[in-house]
Image (cartoon, rainbow, N blue to C red; front, side, top):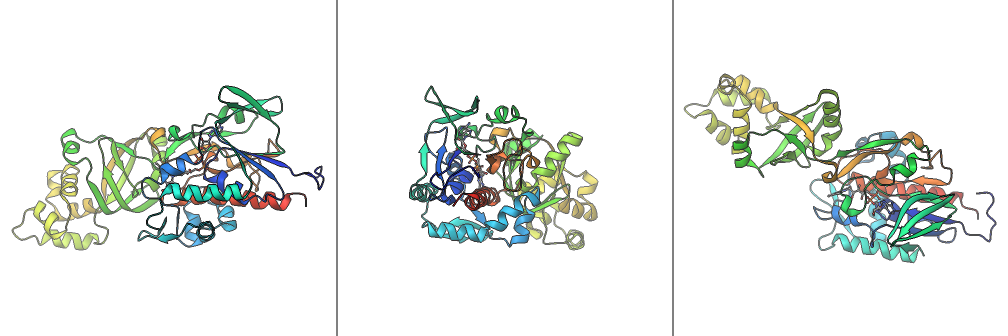
Length: 407
Ligand SMILES: Cc1cc2nc3c(=O)[nH]c(=O)nc-3n(C[C@H](O)[C@H](O)[C@H](O)COP(=O)(O)OP(=O)(O)OC[C@H]3O[C@@H](n4cnc5c(N)ncnc54)[C@H](O)[C@@H]3O)c2cc1C
């Protein structure tokens, strides 16, 4: 940017108005840049509001090392977390008037009574304060010659900002605006994109009809779920489609890998993580006059759905053998045959390949063009990690651009 004189304020066009874009625009220095957001919807942050519906989990309170371990690829996201951590994010929220608290799950939420729309409004107030101009119903449609091309209510609009930042999100929940329709424009410029796949989504299981008719909606609580090398303690709900919930979402990467390599994935569940195999076996061996089902439900406090699952996933001999049944309680194996449709996933993996970006998020093949957020190919479980990464990237890019701006 050596060509800018001291009188000239460079213009930045941010395309998309989700969390990554909002943090970027709130953090760019208005004394150094003229910043505009171009959003295809009539409002900002629609996916942010959807995320707020099921418990508004803004970030997580884990320490820095564990926090960074949640991401794939770790090294890509780690550097943005170093610039803007979960603690920094909570501090920033406090400064814009949003108090947060750490829940029992260690996840961070806005305090009771603060709705998702209140958080969005506080961010929007900050945008106005930062002199960001907002352009709604502007859908980016690629380039015309060297200018960015937008469609605005049937009209074609072109503009040539000094810098462009893409923040158009992933490809799930298309109703929120994040539909991946930008992919052809970037790949047309030679940017390597990986196909989008669902992440943090439900897994398909071919339940027996009688079983699922009776148990759909039942929860497996305080279980430990394994797939491949990934493990998570938590809860999952059985549905007609299969299984979903915070205990299984973080295994998405391993499930996807097994499905692509073998056509199915083994989801292994420890239904009683607090008791070891020996203890379980001992209790089953000493059942006295109780039936096996009665021991499972009364002495081991397993729920009816858990006992039924055990019965259906063991032979008669295994079910009646304390040794085998104890093993099954710790290793209940379900066969996953597919993933939920991409549009129903909480997040997606895929998009811009990370090696297409410089350390400062500039597209190597398009100098002066940057990308932030879920449109880049990284992955993380729900639990606040997705939003934190988007906010961290937005903040880190703003810091870089502020430092690089002419004085
Ligand atoms: C049901 C659900 C629950 C979730 N819960 C959580 C949670 O509890 N915790 C958590 O951390 N994360 C959660 N997430 C994920 C989180 O919301 C996303 O990771 C995050 O919103 C991604 O931010 P982003 O800025 O990259 O993109 P997005 O929020 O997807 O925003 C992208 C924006 O770009 C706009 N856009 C797209 N294409 C164009 C175009 N061509 N021209 C102009 N504008 C365009 C879109 O309209 C959209 O407004 C949840 C998501 C869903 C769907």
